[in-house]
Length: 144
Image (cartoon, rainbow, N blue to C red; front, side):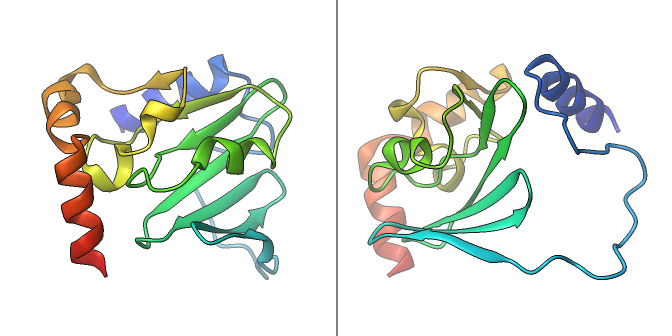
């Protein structure tokens, strides 16, 4: 419950709560169809809600772009292969902030491309280990 409250507070502070409900989640009667947004050699994205785009990198890692009134939040950055920043900037004209769920290589590898990154400070040591180039390369090789 604490994590839900912290994420809610962060998204509210960034103006990213338009259309998002952090209460009890109930299944929709009929889900909206997923629409492909853009596919490149490095990324594939699909709109899963009016303000949420799911992005998959070449290693199969998932990221989410949540667009609010003032900012767009990129949840995780995958392993860091390809120009994720340019790819995401084509989807929004709002300033982009990155929110890392945790510091594993498949979630935090692309953070160096962004200026505003939020991460739990308890993950700092893990982040340093997992974002080293040899760890990222090893992860991508293991995925292929």
